[in-house]
Length: 120
Image 1: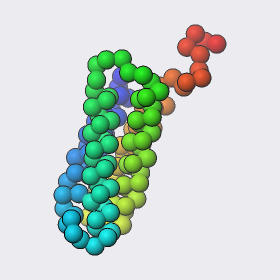
Image 2: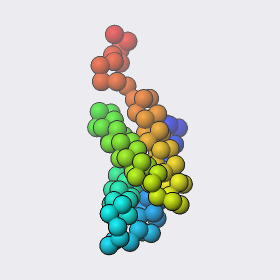
Image 3: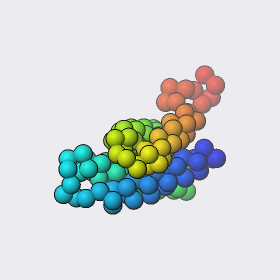
């Protein structure tokens, strides 16, 4: 349960950082700035959706949760790479990488689809 909370917290922090960074980019700016804005918005939305999914009290399908975590991690890493090229975006890139790692760590704690729950 602790890993789930850590992942949700990392997603929240990443979503906040990406939304803030995207808001600083001019919509009609140069292509690299427009890319950073689009990636920041996408990452914020994916992280927010992942956090909401992790916060649900109902029993979730582990396979679906694993897919969401993998998607979130992938988007976060892609976004971090984009922000690496933008001065002043180091903290946002770091938040993205921390979120990707938290998602990977939590996904690892889930049962693998082919592992036997009955020990076989």
